[in-house]
Structure formats: C-alpha cells, structure tokens
Length: 401
Ligand code: LMR
Image 1 (cartoon, rainbow, N blue to C red):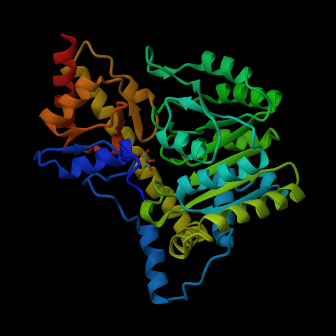
Image 2 (cartoon, helix red, strand yellow):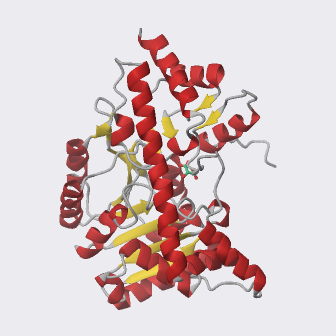
Image 3 (cartoon, rainbow, N blue to C red):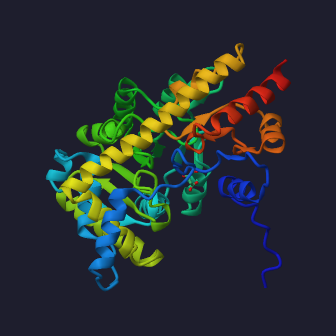
C-alpha cells in the first residue's frame, strides 16, 4: 500500500544531531541543534524546575486531562512573561492565550487557525528561515514565500530590502518574524527598525506572526520581548508563538504558548474558541506535567526570581563564548573578520562557511555544524572552544589561502 511513498530525507537539524552522536571523534563538538548546554557540556536541569518537580512528587495529583486551552495558571504566566506584567492588551482581556506543545505546536495551531480565518493568504518567511517554518505553514495549506532578511556581505540585516518587500505585500498577508535571537542567523532588528516594521504592518494590514523561542537568551527577558510588546501597544492584531524549551530547559516536556492579540475582549473570546477547536482536532490537550512545572516556577515569586537569575547565567555564558571565539580567532586568523560572533545575538551565529569547509570541520575535526552554516553557540565551553577555533582556523585558512 505504501511502497510508492518517497523516502523522508530527514530533518537537516535533527539528522545531523543524530550523525554527531554516531561519530567517534574523541574531541567532537555538537553545534547542530538549538539546545543550551552548560559549561560542563550538559543540558541543565534548572534548580527552579527541580524544586517544582520535587513538590509534584511529594504531593502527587491525578493526571487528568487539561482543558483544551491548557492550565489557567500557565496561560496567565505566558501572558506575563511575553507581554509584560503591565500589558494593557492583557489587562483589557484582548489576548487569547493557550498552552501548546512547545513553540512548534504553537506555530501549527496558529497556522491551522489562520487557514480557517484567511484561507487565501500567503505566508512570508525570512530568508534564510528555520526550515520548519516553511514545512509547518506549507503543511497547513498556505503558499510560503521568502522576504529578504540576511545580507551575506555584512553578515547582518538586509533591512532596506526587507522593508521594500513588506511594503509590497497585499493586505492580510501573514508575516513570520522573530522578535529576538533570530533562528538561524542571530541577526536581530534594532528598536528603531522594529518601529518602521510596525508602521508598515499597520499601514498594509498585514498579519504579524511572531515566533519567540529564545526569550531571555539575547539581551534579557524584558528586552527580548520588545517587538511583541511594541506591536501589542501599537494596536496591531498579532499572533505570538512562545517556547519555554530553552529558557526553562524543558525541551521534551513540550511547553509553549500561543497568544493572539485582538481588537476587543469579545473578539479574543471568539479566537480562543477557534484555538480550542484546532487543538481538539489535533491532540486534544497539552501535557499535564510540563504545564504544572512551568506554571509552578513562573507563579511562585521566589522561584520566578531564581529562574530569571538562571536564565541570566545561560545568557552570560553564551555571550562569554562569543567573546572567547572572537578573541581566539583574532589571534589565530588575523585576516578573518570574526566580529559577527559578537554582533549576532542568542544561541545562533550564521557563519557563512561553505559546504566544503563544513564537511572538513566534521570529517577532520569532529565539529558538527548544520549545512546552512548556522552554529549553535552553547555547544561551546571553555574546555572545547580552543579545539573549535583551531578547527575553524584550519578550514578557513585552507580554503582562503
Ligand atoms: C533548532 O532550531 O535547532 C531548535 O529550534 C530545535 C528544532 O526544533 O529545530
């Protein structure tokens, strides 16, 4: 019955992550997937998370189904973290929020919801993109297109080209944007640039869909949410997919949220109903355990403060690795401009390395970077960063000299 099907080529990120685990190089380094590793190369269990998990074990509760929209305390926490404690849109009851299966689940629910509301729209995604954006929106039945984003010449933002493209889009076009820590480039907009984008989104009647999976790992928990809050403040109708996978280190618990900022409380009620309907027909309800863990941390003043410190620790370690790479490459490869390691934000850096260089890194040095040249910086630590910069210096000098 199924012999006619095509072989799945595998996911470019998960596939290489698997290949890394099969490699036997003694000094191999995994810079493939967007996972935060600590200084010892481990995926941390945050003490704030462990504290809530202990409570859940000591005082066990029945694992009932959560409501389709998720746990109330979780949804309130999503709104506080993403929109800020003083959000006017939240206070006015204009934000419909649900608990989702990670950020990916939020994108999928949002995509299906939008397909019902605006079936003829196109979805425009940054070039380059997190590959799954095209897959998720394409899978929901939307044609997907790309707007200019990254300029390889400067390893920065192609802002003028991006704006020109956005200005030409028809009303009700869906525009996928990353408020911070752009995946895959690490190239973010400045606040002034966001203001210009917001003006065009409003003028053209576009529908922004914000994907914020790395909040807190760029400049700070509040700072990273600037674009989300500025759009809500500007009165735009906006969808926001957020993830706690990285900033709470709860990847496999699948903890995310989807929020839709609406024009009024009654519109938000309508939207919430449609989001529940989408959830019911895909997976019925979100996970109990992850929901209670996240809500437990974010709704306890002491644990919340502790968590902010834990996230700051992750953020500072990433920044420290960026500085170390830059410093070492400046010494090892004087002709190579590695300042992009300092300029780009969050977990990812877009290296512009060629396929030949990436292959040489894997085969000669056991350094795994995905084919786009995106480097997941938290795979580095003070024990392996020398090996990384030696390897990079080797492949860059072989190919350029
Ligand atoms: C990544 O981009 O590496 C992460 O967001 C993990 C994923 O799901 O691809």
